[in-house]
Amino acid sequence: MIAPASSILSIRDLVTVFETPGRRVVAVDGVSFDIGRAQMFGLVGESGCGKTATCRSILRLFSGAPARILAGSILYDGIDLAQMDEHRLSDIRGAEIGMIFQDPMTSLNPTMRIGTQIAEGLRRHRGLGRRQAHRTAIDLLGTVGVPRPATRLDDYPHQFSGGMRQRVLIAIALACRPRLLIADEPTTALDVTIQDQILKLLLRLKDEFSMSVLLVTHDLGVLDGVDNSFAELERPASGTGIFANPTNVFFISGAVVNNGTGFDGQISGELCTSGN
Ligand SMILES: Nc1ncnc2c1ncn2[C@@H]1O[C@H](COP(=O)(O)OP(=O)(O)OP(=O)(O)O)[C@@H](O)[C@H]1O
Ligand SMILES: [Mg+2]
Image (tube, rainbow, N blue to C red; front, side, top):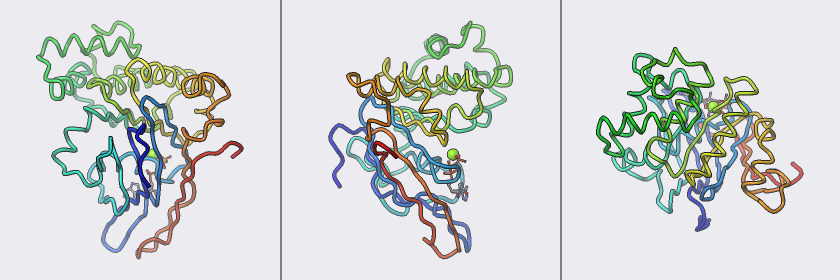
């Protein structure tokens, strides 16, 4: 299948496995979807179905796990990230494609001030000097809605609430003005009011930065909560909700089964169509 020209990311028949001696877990089995430019795209599925593994496959960020992309392609602007050498991919990570990991506490370094953690990416990927990075970090914290950003830069992660930590992670991911933001369950650990605020924030930033967003969730209610916003953004004229637009939600379903020999498990993916 050829990726549509309007897509920023086209995943085709992706298969990712975790391999340890005598054991293979098929974490992603044959997933395909396209994300449009400046589109918010929902990736939905039950726990363990491979959402995080799909996200981590895009940037090959498996944090030491014995993971491997076995088949398929991940076309980013037409270039296959699955085949890209590590060096080139490391330039894309955090610069063109930002990622918000599932667990905000383990994603932040508890021993480093928030300001330093935001400035790190600014200095590395945008080449900003110390002062400019500091000023930009303040702006970014303000953009994601952290009150009194200038004074909060010196704080450590444990001094922030869960919702504010999630905002910090979004600020870090935005620091390099990514063209695609992967947000892996960015609201799971948060209460409903804060969930709503973070989702609205992502929608606003998507517009402000003309950024595509891959939003992962196992909770359809999360998408339902921003239903109108999705519809407004994707189909301004209709206003009928994300489920009326079959191209912006992808469901993964099924269970991963492992017998140590290979693919006895089946995860199937399908594009949502109206009515399912
Ligand atoms: N480091 C690992 N080593 C071995 N298997 C793993 C590893 N990480 C994940 N898996 C397996 O891969 C499958 C997919 O896991 P993944 O974390 O992608 O699920 P998920 O859809 O993100 O679930 P959740 O909604 O709970 O976050 C699961 O069966 C899981 O047990
Ligand atoms: Mg996950």
